[in-house]
Length: 497
RNA sequence: GGGCCAGUAGCUCAGUGGUAGAGCAGGGGACUUUUAAUCCUCGUGUCGAAGGUUCGAUCCCUUCCUGGCUCACCA
Image (cartoon, rainbow, N blue to C red; front, side, top):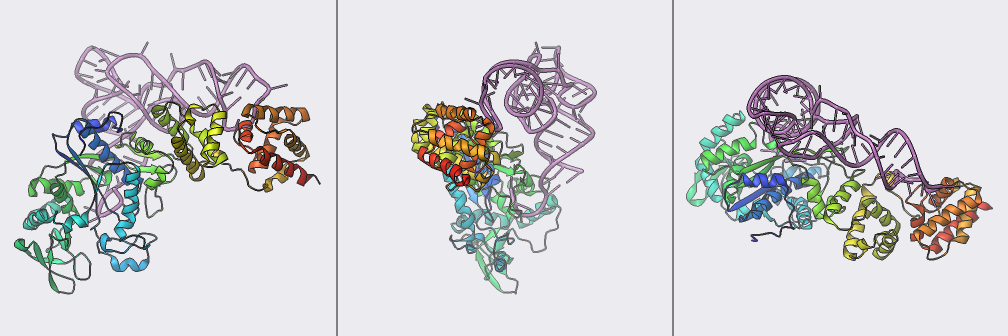
């Protein structure tokens, strides 16, 4: 485990330092936990990033830190999410790790949602240990705390009743055995600590035993939360605001930790939620989901951290990935690069040359971004980001595409416009620079007595099928001159007769 | 009702215990060259309200008002 980080490396916001300074001496275990019951989205990512930032802040002050992502894979399937086959009802109550992947592409339901998220964490270059709770249970990590919980059933029950105000069932147990049917829900009758097991009765009155050192059941989640702190020696964990209200899971877990497990309550940070501008809070059931990978498609990991954490996570965040995005990227680049190319310009380039790095380099060089072109690998990435953004998020005014075939819209070009295009087709020579092309386009319009606005509109229409676009000179110059001449000639010729 | 967050220029928001800032919008000017054009120029707004701490508060504390989100397993 690394002790020290290069000062340039991790982005540690000031709030993270503040949080870290409130935590005692190490060693530290920073934990974040998420249930893979559905898509793990950008909001969940915020939790992980909060944890990461605090872990980094601790490391920065020289602490030994273990950073753990606890995936609640043993949790039961609670409801049928949209898009999941209805016959999955038969798996309700089964551990997510033991439910088949609805799309058949992964080993389990849990992995189906977990693996893409793991890939995103890798894409984020995050140094985190991913633990699957069913494996922790199976390997006995939870055995000791489960034993304690079972022995203190009465106290735990009292805390739950007191704090949540709910009346717990007569036969409540902190431990939920997995019955023969695969469902979690047997009724515990007897605890056999020396065998690390319980005797339980299933819904049909059958008795059997469940070994809690081998993952044959799990703790109820409120108890598990407190137990987990102890089992993993957690010292810090962030929570979404929904968990931290009075009578909520952190309330009960705090008291359980102190009074039953005799374990100090880990440091905490409450974070607010992320919304997508114009769409609202993230919600799988409403189809409002932003996946971490979608962010990584349009920006580098550093920018993702910046976007998600830049503002104190205790404050709500309204993500604007459309109109406001270019400015965000420009601000980010201004801080991280010596010669940033305006994002909007990259978008124009990407839409003109696609992902052809050499042509992009050519175009940028013409535009005066000589320095930015040096690092081709970086240019390739940036081009990809701009390209993906243009396809998926860009507002209409940013989007254009050079049409492979003559656009139908050329019908809107009148005779004057066609004469103009004919003239340009004749005059356009190879190897023109952006300014020269701009001059040609403009002066030709003046010579023919065509209003510049109309002339330019004809150019855009012939190439893009719309009336406006990126600055015409550099744009036309960046295209294959032969292609442009043929297109313009076609447009003027076809429609003349 | 509990919790968290917010309330600063028309809009979106930065911000610091010591005479208030940016971007956009808007006004004016320049360029006979379309483009969310570009360049130059212009910002006194009771920093939600009232108290308190302080030599001094927009920033710290208290109370209140308004708005947003959240509250039993959807971060």
